[in-house]
Amino acid sequence: MHWLWVTGGLTALGLGMIGIFLPLVPTVPFLILAAFCFARSSERLHRWLLSHPVMGPPIQDWERSGAISLRGKKLATLSMVAVLGLSVGMELRPTILAIQAAVLTVTGIFIWTRPSA
Image (tube, rainbow, N blue to C red):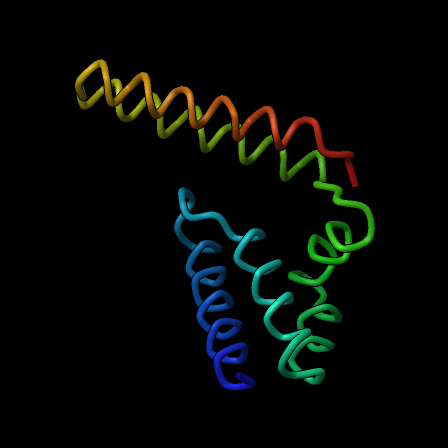
């Protein structure tokens, strides 16, 4: 079971790192998942992730109080609007646009109802 948690943590960490460079891939949710997996498998990796100067603070905010930074909220909202705008520009079917808009709206509500770090 230990290796399953380590593998999950490394996979989530890799996806989070990809998200740093690709604006539409979420970063922090994958880092939070990596921290969750590492907490169950590797104290050393968990401690490294939480103490990292860039990746650590958002994870600590979430673990401490379920908080998301105001900057993070704004960037997430901007990304969601950009994705929806791209979909509209691609002239996707109205049903797909409606589903996408509904999912993004619910996601936005979740993000903006979290406390600010």
